[in-house]
Amino acid sequence: MTGSRNQPAEPSPLEDVRAPMPAVPPAWEPFGGDAAIRVRDVRVICTAPDQIRLVVVKVETTEPGLYGLGCATFTQRPLAVVAAVEHYLRPFLIGRDVHDIEDIWQASFVSSYWRSGPVLNNALSGIDMALWDIKGKIAGLPVYQLLGGKCRHSAALYAHASGSDIDAVEESARRLMDQGFRHIRCQIAVPGFSTYGAQIVPGKNSGQRAALHLDPTEARWHPAAYCRLVPHLFDAMRTRLGDEVELLHDIHERIAPIQAIQLAKDLEPYDLFFLEDPLAPEDIGYFPQLRQQTSVPIAMGELFVNPAEYVPLIQNRLIDFIRVHLSDIGGLSPARKLAALCEFFGVRTAWHGPGDVSPVGHAANLALDLACPNFGIQESHQFGEATRAVFPGCPEIRDGSLWSNDQPGLGIDLDEELAATYPFPDHVFNGAWPEIRQPDGTVVKP
Image (cartoon, rainbow, N blue to C red; front, side, top):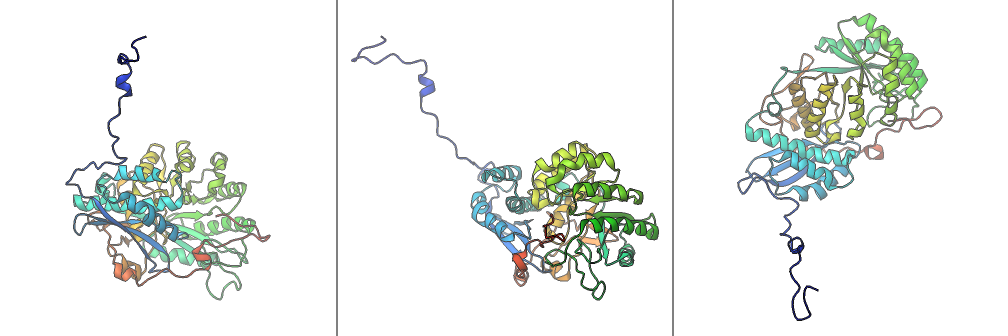
């Protein structure tokens, strides 16, 4: 024995290990010190100047008059994003150093434990883009300068031509060509059936309507009829428009994988710039077969929200353009990393850019477009006068390209009083994506 009841035992060799540990530091400790500029408040602005529900996050700082804007638009589920920002991210972020963009992104990303969904990613995007906006304003530089500077003076755009028949599509395409566009996506209505992306002229094709965004319709979708018609469309477009224009087409994931493979092969003679979203995210296992059987360039990613969906397609060189929606993957921070990854595998960028990306989101797209050497093309959307009034500083379309205004940060602002005069419109099913069905009643993806 080393001692008795009346004598203490000799010190154990483990005594130092067993001694009380120092006080555990808090989970988060500010890096910037007392002089840092910090997050003072986080607010969400909901507006719909063009009848499209937009969600913008405003991060206010402890520096008077300094704030940033970020896009958090998930137009089908906007109020879920609002709740995520207001109830969870706002209290989590108040007091943090606004310069710590990467740390804030990483901490916020794992704070929910389950992650990588569109609601939480959009909420995080609103914060992330706003912090980049703030950093640019503090530096007195446009965000593209923070990303390495310009690789080009502007970003080439593709525009959307559509119609109820081939003549109408040609007419639409020529109008766009007259405006300076040289990359044109062509979509055509399928007689008697619902069709994605094709505007229907009143009085033509009586009884036929388009399954447009936020426009529910009772018309049915017929994949086989669509697959038979599209090659005829591009045969006519290439013959009538010549080789001076780049042609694109969006399948929008609405047909079976084997039909998409066959359609891609059928479109090879028409030299497409790219074929967009031929497969649904649930069907990405078919990409090796698609790549093996066709040389048509493939653009993919509009519905992706998780790196596990798109990283394998890039590293295996199964796609040619990445088309993610920046706010759906979490903002500018993950998008710049994604663009850099794509560069090493010969994949070009073609960020999602319709009307349900807010002007703030378009400004973030443009910052990457200008700074990335592997830029491919940018989807265009012409905002209406009301939206441009609500968001002064919108990037400008000139001669088929998107131009930055070169102001510090993202170069865009928000008139909150005017935004409040454009509340969210009422939509059937609260703005859900239209319910599209095949003739037998089966729901069609996406």
